[in-house]
Length: 402
Image (cartoon, rainbow, N blue to C red; front, side, top):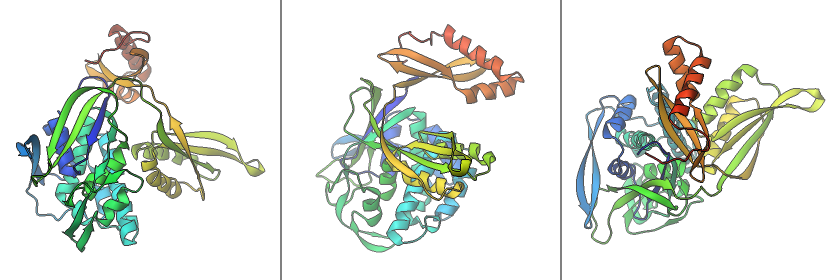
């Protein structure tokens, strides 16, 4: 899609399933080879993803046809699936997004069935094709550089459906639980929204109308059925914001901690960020009786708050925390690249009114290049800054996405 971070809007007015959403992202330009590679990293040689063009109520769409070549039954508990995701050689953002989706599914299954999230059984959503759908969608979003995912009203359907728990009403219990707080409608007869599809949207997206944007691509993903009364498709619209983003609803989680081994903090902060926190930081404070301590702050979306609260309770010694709603204002972002010592280093760019106000090398890329070249990090950091300057990535310069 180029160097600029991409906004994506999902039209789920005819429902959503994981394979439909993945097909729409592939139709919009996501690289099938990259998506297949991510799926293979989690479930090696288990499922081949193929696509074909089809028609749904007269509309052209892309249909995803998974070919399962493994006899293993899938990963039906959150504990077993999480081990597999953590061990897989995935890109960090892809792993973090997949963990967020399955955390949300596990918590939903636990509430619906009255069990612990650790022991929640995914049933259909633990099958290999659903694992491929979740990992594939996360990999496709990463490949497309999507940094702002949004979705409109989600159609859920009506009637009844047969599943592993027998005959169930539509919307199914898991789908209703996952969409608490979201705008939904019936939308037609049958199961239009699956737990996997809904979990992907509610874990990774914010619910808003189609934003003002310059449209770059549209993808259409087909469902299996082709009812005459509606096009059974999910549409994805990709583009760049036409105006600076409006404020975004967010929450801040806070906890005062005075009895945690300080060596734990760096790993904890990384875990919080990997699981979807927008930011996580520590502030030194002085507590009662003159005890030195820290306040742990976590900025996140409301959809991520439950999972991140669980991390705070599990991995710190806190016995309580605070949560408050905030408005988050973020400048438009873009990413470019420069070449330093035969390595590609990303340059993170902040924009305002179409001009660069800040351009900084990605430190992880700088550190990796320094290790590979056997030189100090400070030297590569200076070289990356000089390369960015030579490329015109300088505060005050105008920015045009390539």
